[in-house]
Every structure is written in structure tokens, then in C-alpha cells.
Image 1 (spheres, rainbow, N blue to C red):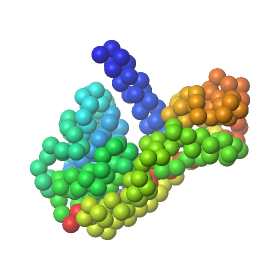
Image 2 (image 1 turned 60 degrees about the vertical axis):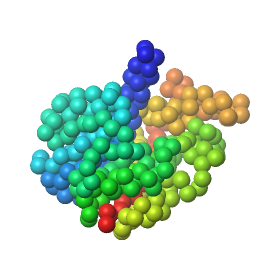
Image 3 (image 1 turned 135 degrees about the vertical axis):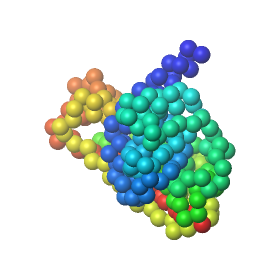
Image 4 (image 1 turned 60 degrees about the horizontal axis):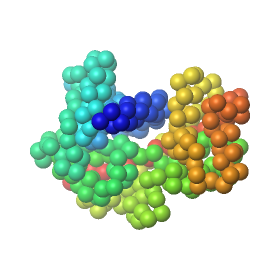
Length: 273
């Protein structure tokens, strides 16, 4: 039990750090959808609720968003964040499984899932159909997925090598069928019976000056994407990776005065028939 609590706390901290990087690009993605003011939406697999609150702001004071997750620790965090942001009237949290949503048919105006569909080992078409079940005809389903990054300016070969390791490929391991890769999501929407499928990719630019929070978040992102000491690299590659990506290194890449990087999120959307 103690180890689980420690693991959850560490994961919560990692999510909080990643939100510093992700929030602007996710907000731009959501803003592009122009969610109807006053609408009721579902954030399936909401995690700690950061995105649920962003969605609640997008639908305005008369709207409401329910964040659903299977972990009570995440829901507790979400409620705490909603209270601090004075959004308790516009965002609520419910425990449940995305594979079997605890809601009646046609009860939401829209539903979404961020960094979940296509990333968890569950048939994405099945998940989209389950989301569509609880959305009214004419309502939209959308998913947002991290889709690419360029984080090591000046070191394209090393970054390509890192991206080709199990850490860098995760969750797209070599045994995963091509049609389950997130960039095939338009096919999932079509197979789930959703109409007007569309896709768009958004870019998050990062450059100096970087405050202490951004430095910490980026250093953690390197570890999250490529591992702390990636054993699949050659000895020379590992030395170079640790030299550039450890925040205690004198050659830490974020100390470059002209540091510039970017990552992308891809938005996929479809309409319930």
C-alpha cells in the first residue's frame, strides 16, 4: 500500500509538471472546436482534472463538464483543483471505467478523451463507440494525442535514436499493429460510425527565457520520453544522452541561450449520427 501511494504521488507530480508544458497547446486545440456555451460534456479518463477544468472554462458559466477516471486519487485531486479555481459548479468528477461508461445514452452534448484513446491497450474503435453512445445525435466526439516532438536542437541523430528505443516508441511497441497507431485515428472514427471525421495538428513552441518551472518540466519530459538511463543505447549514445539531458550536467541542453524546441498534439474529431 505504501509503495502504491508513493507511486501515485510521483505520478501526480509528473502530471502536474507536464501540464505546465501541455496546457497552452491543449487550450488552443479545444478553443478551435468552439464548444457550445452552456453545453454538457464528458472528459473520459480525466486523470487529475487539469483538462476537465480547461474544458469547463471553455463552455462558460452555464456549462458543465464531468471528469471520469478509475483512480480515486486522481478524482480527489481534480475536486481539489476545481475548488481552488472556484469551478465546482461547472466541473464535477465521477469514478468509472471508460470501457463501460456509467451514464445513460444520449446524455452529453459532446465527449472527449485526452492522451487515452489509442494509448491504452483497449480497442480504440470500441472506446469511440462507447463515447458516442452517451452523446446526443449531432454532438461531437474528439480526442487529443501527443503526436511528435523535436527537443534536442542540434542533435537530430541522437534524438532519432532515442525515439527508436522502447521508451521513445512507447506505447507503440514493435508488436503493435499499424492500424492501432494514433495517426490512424481517422479510420477509427469512420469504423465507429461517426460522421465528418477531421484531423488537425497543433504546435507548442518552447524557447528561452525558461523559468524554473519550465526547466524542471522539460527535464522531466526528457526522462518521461526516453528514460533516465536508457539501456538500449550504445555506451557512446548513453554518455551523450546523459550529458545533454541531465539537469545536473554542465552541458545540459536547456542551458543553451538559443534553445528552441517544439512538440505537437493531434486533434481528431467526429460527429455522432
